[in-house]
Image (cartoon, rainbow, N blue to C red):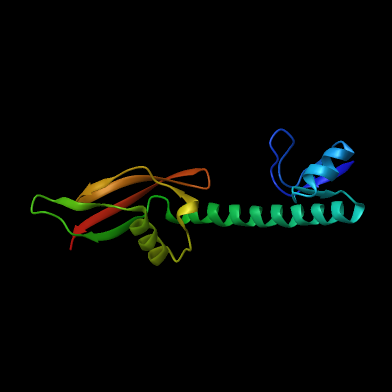
Length: 147
């Protein structure tokens, strides 16, 4: 029997895949647990249409993020933080603060899921940090000034 998986099933396949399984396995395990549905021609067509829409949205999002990378690469943002007299910050610059400032300055709508950030800025001054947006590595200058 052919089934369309509704969830990832260990040792069988991933969500959205069409698999041929034993009738008993489908009827007694997969379908009652809402892990799969029988693969009729209508359901297969619906699945293909959904995958096309998903791919199209993913491609649009990728293009949007690539344009954004070109827009902000090498640019500079300024963040105000509380610091000691020696210039040490009381709290490191967080990804949230960088995102908020980038969204304001470059009029974007990035969120934490779009960015990888592993560096810690802990001093006043100008710093160059590496961000990874949509598999693109970019450098962003951050000027940290005392509040």
